[in-house]
Image (cartoon, rainbow over all chains, first blue to last red; front, side, top):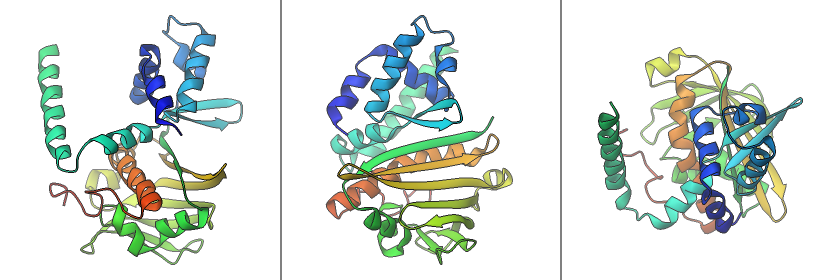
Length: 107
Length: 152
């Protein structure tokens, strides 16, 4: 599983959007992921294949249904590679602060 | 609507070594925040996930076991009252060869929306990433050999 594939997969906003949608609701079918998308079904299929090849999406077949799951492990591995052992707690605190501030602003 | 996470990682190891890492306390402690599994690893046997200082985090039983290929645990949280109240979850480890590496798929699921499934989604990526590093380099990732101070 190459890191190049992960970065290439993440470089596309449409693919990041698909990951966001799986994060909001895991285990969606192709049909569900196409709902509300301006892309064609074919384009969504292609993007999902790229995400699956990068191991960012895991799929599971249940009868005729294929469900898609967000697999965060490649991103975890990238984080582990570059984030130092003492940085993590501080970064988590900053991420939390950023999130809280942004949420407050949205309200 | 069921609740489910599917985690996939590819590890440069053998199925036997991966099985050993999951089922042997001396190994498991190093990458699972100091926790280890207590189990006789037979179908129907009781299973517990035990913290370094002895408290039981999760408990259940072995629903299916086929070393070194597949393990299914009935998994109930024991230390967060509302997660425990949501009842049983199921955790499956599927181990297969994939070219010259081993593919590990961990599926943690419940038949209905379940607070513990949401809770473990924070921990699994760290544990599995550390398991991979442990098997590939002989050393687990920093911080995964004991519980973070605030959670302990």
